[in-house]
Length: 146
Image (cartoon, rainbow, N blue to C red):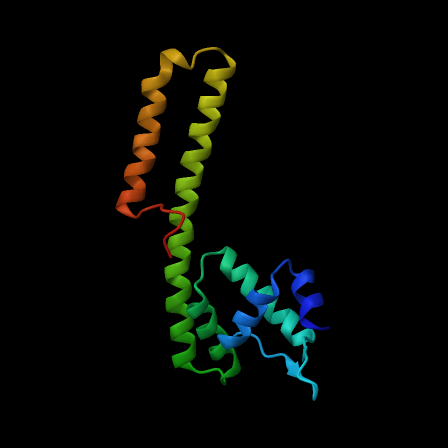
């Protein structure tokens, strides 16, 4: 498929698809007329990219994994991959803890508001927000840290 259809299928802009290509993440076939043709391999790769981006992997990390995938399996490749995955697993675990606390805080606030008890519990709610903010500052649950 051509870039416009490919981008639309994966809810991306054509600029994003071109950027991924420029960064060496996507490798479409080029026709004689210069048009890019995105095949099944490109579809597999874009799904891989989109899933890993959602998990917090940087484009550089994704590129590293795609490069390792093309190499023959070796202990060195395995070690690099395990190290990268270990760091991401720790990051996701921290995110989960943060989001679980955030969910509980939101549910409590919702309940207090529904029961008309928000005003008398402002300090408790403020304390929950303060606790979550402190966790962000410590880097133990920041949802944007990779």
